[in-house]
Image (cartoon, rainbow, N blue to C red):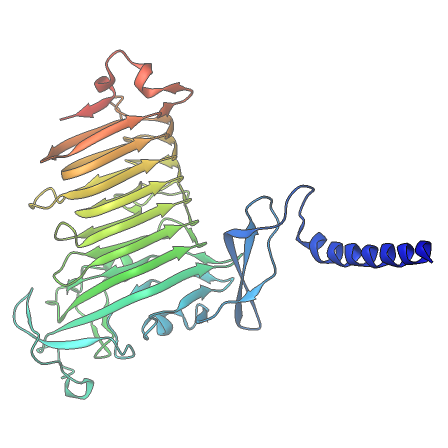
Length: 407
């Protein structure tokens, strides 16, 4: 009897072990670990529904696809109309198409957060009364100020997504010839639904656009016009918590004086807390350019065949605006460029940390790899474990400022 009981117990234990194995083995990617799906997210679309899955932090396996809640799938046909609506709190998923037209975040009659105010001057407006849409005059003798607040939005792509034109955000007075490089000089007022047809016409509206907690992720920008361009040079037009991650910007023909990623504002701190991480920028005139901001992280990006500076950190040269706060440039690879790899120009009370960057065949005609210019106040900087080819920059030269220019 004792032997029979032992046999029953053994069978029960074996069944438990088999059940446990059936449960646990699918989680095993290779001997020695259980899948932990917490890493890079990839996106997919099926039957107009967006899905996401996450990569295991221990191996290359992705977990099961899950429905991406609060998402909107866009195509070349509907993308601008979607961007013109209230997209706050949404994930905008670009389908596997070529997006060839200019994409713009702008005030619009279709967006419930857009507000309309009387024009007081080129830079100010009467905030005491907001016009309703039916009160607007569709006549170019009337001029208005528009505001729009865009927050908690993520823009993502799937395999096969290609954005071949500029993703454009512009605050300020709009003149018909301001965007000639983008759309042939034609300005469209998306609030009144009217065009400015003459290139020399005065701007008939001004936009004030604020961006908060905005992310671009897993997007492919292709060609010389495949850029992200954010011009926030107007009052009440702040940008904060702005991130670009895991995106590519590749072209074989650089567009003169254009950066793959460009952020600009009119006052120090109107742009703050920006992150550029795990992006690849190849063939462009400049890589990342930001000015007059507070706090930035530029981490683990690749810059290849850049004509001018790969990373440009600036203040407004002609105005009393500086970059400030904590600026971290680390773990980037910068290869084959004919400008400076990294430039800091016009900072105030900033802490600059440049660490663990790899630079190869990247300098201007004077042999300058980096430049630190017009740093005032309590600004301080450190260069740690950066490498030019295979040698530490700090040990490569007898006088580092022969190659790192500091004023």
